[in-house]
Image (tube, rainbow, N blue to C red; front, side, top):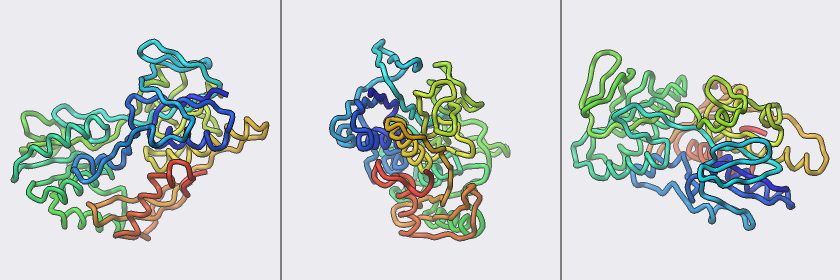
Length: 352
């Protein structure tokens, strides 16, 4: 059985390693635009210089799994073609290309490896007293602002978003805001209309100077599925059946941010259990057994506030927020377990 995994993020890495473990006859090839696995939830640490967010694919994949550096141009009908013209046939494919970032002009994106590297170099070159602005009030923005502020207390750090920290509610929200303030991060609840000539313009009409402006908003997915003629939703995510297979081609499993799973938001905590379930479905099919439908279930959401603090809030299965929350080391562990899915081969409690 030939299996191709397109994308080596959280979903793709877990899928490849789990296939090797559960489907012994599979010949697995992982195709990724770069030779490294990028731990996306650590890119804010890469930017601040407090951790390394990439590791060679060869060090992360089980023995016997082949890898190829390249970008897939189209996929379908049992084969895929790379942008250099090379082609691969497959019996099954796992589409795991994740989500993408479309930054506002004048900003540096923090949600991609290339953007994070640009931001790291630019941040390291800033002299004391410079101003760093992070645009985006979600988890990526909060973690980036906090990490930069803690690593570079000589800088003025500001975070701007329509409602910074509103991924949380009640006292957990207040705890996120107080954590940012403790690190000296100025919080601006406003929208950004433009960034030009070192000036950030706000929806309210105000503006301020910024020596480095970071874009921390994820928006949309790569267009591989749409370009290949697979059915996609309004966001460009591939529409899947109850077993996480493309509704157009049962040989193509789609997992992670690029999959249009009802009720799913962009999150690595969802990518890993989806990948695990899709691999289990493949294993069942290979053994002639009936597959089981995927069941989405949330448990918690968490955000780090520098290296020594975090906030985690428990959720109901439908992702609505509970009042219960934890802070500090316990919250950091929740985030770690949710994002990593164990060790790229174990299930998390957030999905199948």
